[in-house]
Image 1 (tube, rainbow, N blue to C red):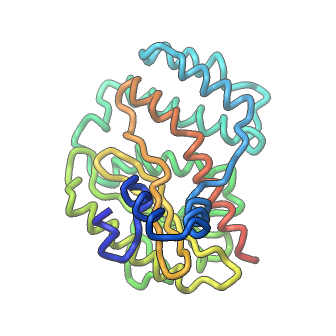
Image 2 (image 1 turned 90 degrees about the horizontal axis):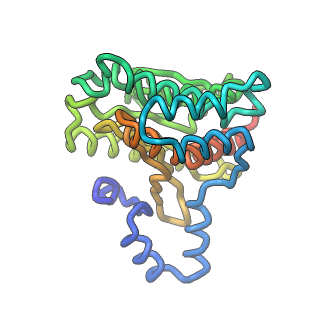
Length: 276
């Protein structure tokens, strides 16, 4: 909370802050803040739900998770658009299974920032938005965005055919077991949110005053949101997970997938508000 508090942002990820907000605002305004901070509801396909159920009851051994994945998934009838949720589960779970089973898992070694990103947040976000690449484009590694001056970003998620619109900024705060310091994380959070405030302030009145970001820090991935309500800015960490290096961590990641998909839906909804 302190890392964004200095920017005047209220961090809704803290239960103590939620209690303070309820005491500070009247009930109507409090309910509106809670509503604004909620991710959109999505319908998980039967195909995807069967995958999630199979993995959730699997024994905590990679061979057992792999058997569950292949028994419930990788169907010949698969369609990337209709089964985008199942596709995300299949590709990411298989990816982390292969890393866990590999002879020299890079996520268990000292791995630099960009290399660690390739195995983790880059792979996950690429797979998350592959079924929406007619709407959003992923611009990776040290790129500038016209609305954030000379700042460089590890990724900018842009609206296709309009590089002036970027609903998501992405930052890596160190690698795996190297350079992942609290100071680095604090600097990147400040960099992200100060720029997101500026972008929101410039949005047209008919566009929701919302921005999103994703972060990689200390082998964890975070999916977050910033929105404005009246004269205040509110942050919400919607979902986070530790990059899986064990079967237990892999099943925990899988349990977070519905919330990750809801975060993606919010990003897509925000992008759709901008007219071509």
